[in-house]
Image 1 (tube, each protein chain N blue to C red):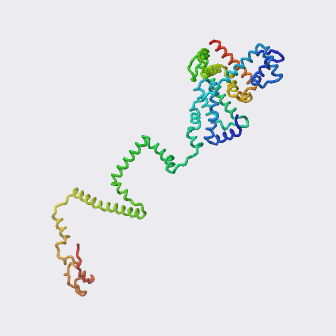
Image 2: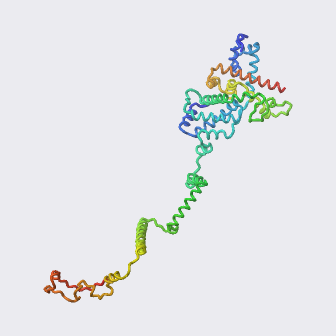
Image 3: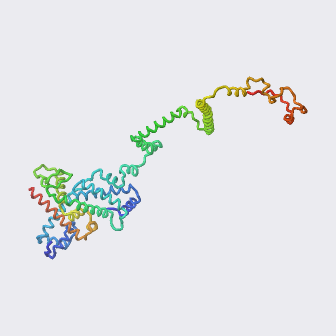
Length: 251
Length: 199
């Protein structure tokens, strides 16, 4: 701006007062000098008119309405929280909800949201299939589970019963295993010619012997007494005198 | 403009992690910031992106606000202005190819400015005409230099006083007044030139 002096006011001073003049805060002698300078100065006069016109144009501009999603977008990009949710949490009065609705809102709905995912459904299906196959293989029936009693006495009783069953099972299995082992050994080592073996067996076979042969006193009759003074020889003399009468039978 | 104590309390609640307080700040200042960005950047999309950026920066630097040093609105406007200056520098190359007649906005059809001047022979429709005039002024505003534009926006559109504007722009009050005067005059000249072409 050229630094002219007109009506006792320089253009620089006019420029500095221009805003105040347009705002209406200039008054009195200052306003008079300002207006006089504007009338006479070739550069400041048009400047006042243009500034006034420009101000009028700008004042005519109205505020624009921001997009409806702006606040939500800002909140999402800053806190990551949707404003709608915040509003329901903070501002709106909390309606009375039953415990069932509370449980549903807190646990069931989030759980259902997870369950609805195909990945979870597939995993659950596979787990259920594996469990059912395992239970079937172990012989567990749903009816058995329904009859289970959880009283301590019942649990203790079922524990001992199960233990006994297991022991019995193994006891029953062992003879079978022994029998199988014996059969295998017989197959591997077939029995020799029955001649001497038969005689040997016959010696031990007492089933056909008379009852008295089974007595302990093999050389005496069953009812014969052995006297202490009887000279039976040096070997027998040292033996104690025993009177045996027995009805014992060998089974 | 704002109750300093109330705003200071709101800011303290925000810093303490109160989401509702932050939402209140966003609700209160988003419209103002969006308007500054829209008038400066000229485009609705740019204004929306810039407004989001302003709030992200505010959210990160909220703890640095000191209410004893100035009003919250001045602090917010300073952040906005700094981001707008950055945005202007980034998009300077794009604008160099623009001309007054080819400027476009997403708020109306991409018509040249001289085609948007209201037709005097058309039947008077105050609302439509007002809208067209507003768009014309908006485009003319976009043709001002950024220093003049930001000064007139803060003064004439946001009604900030000279001291606050001086704080935001980091220049003396005298410079602020000078820029405002030159900005208004330049705008008037641009609009007169446009109207003269049409007439």
